[in-house]
Image (cartoon, rainbow, N blue to C red):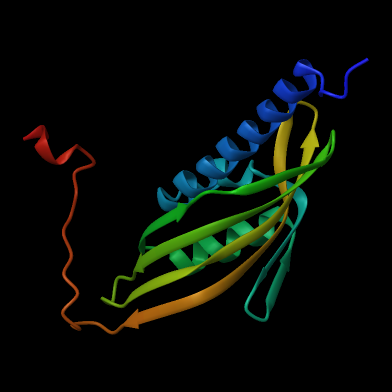
Length: 161
């Protein structure tokens, strides 16, 4: 008998971690492209979100709050090098270092750095975000006309003519 883990168990574990990583990638993409219906599908119905002193409960409440605050803003969110741990076959937790840039219609820009602390639950074959806490290490706010330049994009690569 060997103490080495079963390869099937290791592959299944990696498949779950990969599925959670893809879940978070969709989180950032749907948030930045303001695809609120698709973004909503990433959360457990009873998701809890903590940010500063605010706490929201429920996926619909979270989506409504974020959509209202980011209406007409251009955002870029990145998550990097996650630490994901499987707790059970249907639950996991993760920490994601993050960076975001938010440009509001009045010209204000916010550039933030921090971490998402999350838990996940598996519903059937799909992982969903169960809890989220966003902690900030630093936030840089730039008022309108502060010399921060902007450019627009057609959504095509820069070399696409």
